[in-house]
Length: 391
Image (cartoon, rainbow, N blue to C red; front, top):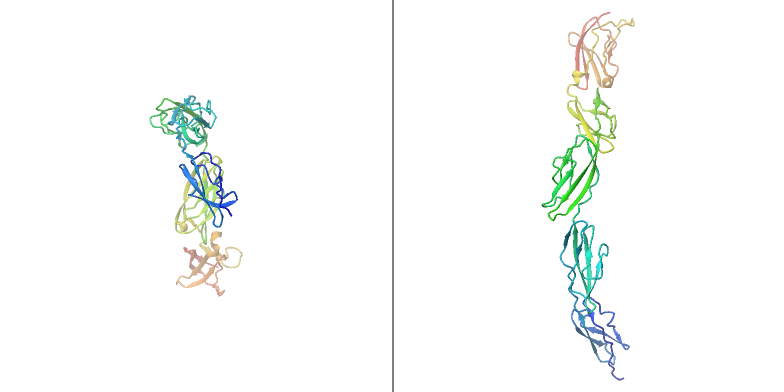
């Protein structure tokens, strides 16, 4: 078979970054092979096609011109006052395309007029005589300040207003009602009525911007509560009555590590401590208030007042037949009564809710008339006294 030389059509000049892979195929005139060196160089390069083995074919070459990209310059960034215009200036190409096209006079010339209302980054794509393209960006900084979001203040609190703190800028807040510093970027207000504040800012270039904020004055909730403490075998049970108004949420902190969100909670406190109980309330607009009070369980013994009878007559006439103590219902289950004669001998003992003495021993033997002594114990609290028994 004769040896053939594959032919290859010349490749038009390309630009750096364009790909050669689709142009340099791995089959020429039915002959397969590979190209070298590796593709996609950045300078004009001669590529060689080498046929695969066992094919009657010579190698062939092609030279590809790779043009450099133009150096496009969009110019220095520009500071602009609101409502003003500026001329952009691009160089390095023969044709141009600017984007975005909004607020620009002609996006296809090198020097259009830009009139943006907000800070905008303009990208220009420049193309040279070899049809190679590159880009650059210029930022037009339009002096403006962020719109302030309307807010609220709880009457009695202090609210800080805040706009951008620009070096060398001047500030003027109006009206000056209840403002701490109407010429600063961040004054505080303790207004008690709803009000709209406006601020005018002038930067070092003389540009002026203005914004405003509405401050709604909201009433704080009124907070108050009552406590009803009752001793119990397990501790002290306190019922809280919430008297707060203009409220929506409640948080009780009982001072012993426990909390509640109920409106009228009941809580059991351990005996022997002083517990700072706090009620925090908030309303639907987020205003809060609080009040606190101390729950004392260290004086439980003094708080329990028991007035026993001093005389009783267990003669079954239906009148004053029992020595009975008026024990708080919550502590009846843990009450223990002991009765002693004048020589200190125990004649009677009773526990639980039936704390009463009928003048008999626990063996149902009647005791003689005379003076007796008793002790009443309730959860570590001891009451003592004397009584007279006659028939």
